[in-house]
Image (cartoon, rainbow, N blue to C red; front, top):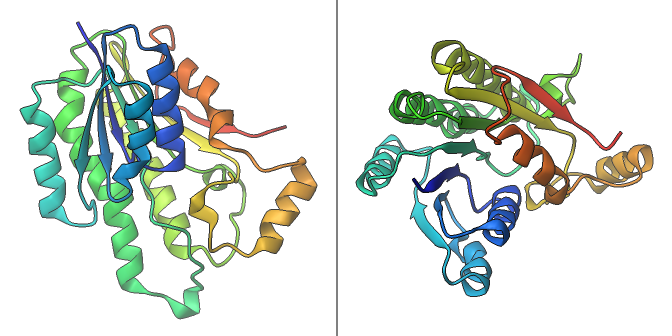
Length: 242
């Protein structure tokens, strides 16, 4: 049986870094179903370095219900049942104050991060639950574990709390036994997601922690939480440099 990963948001810095890591360990049975919204070129270097890697790229806008359904059909058409499911997408960071509430942005963020997860989970988790060693991992944020999140991040914080609830609901219904469903909540990471963040905030994080986290800091944690031996279900695991 092939080792099939379904990576939603695969063209993110975190996703492409981990796919590169998996490619280095591939012994010929790896198949990666990689979803992206943009930046399919992120996979060009991986394909060039590992020409034998079975990676199939699917482009879809998760804020559009029709495109999400098309993505599901395209994945189904491969005939593959994912054994590992990684959910990583999020809109690029942008400040939002409550008094400047942009309802369209809030709804778009919710569709991308929550509705699409629920739809994909309802489609693929019943089959994954039949396969021993299946794992699902959802990208959250340390802010959903903190007593109080930062200010001026309304759409992001609301969507991440809702995604935490969606992950927990999925873990309660489908998790346990052969399928484990968990979340991972890293501290602030140095990725393109933060390109519009106030540099002073990043400088403060560097001052407090010595540096910002990078996608490479998550590789070993991903390996552990996606391993056959990992038997925890419904966890929101915080990852920091401390």
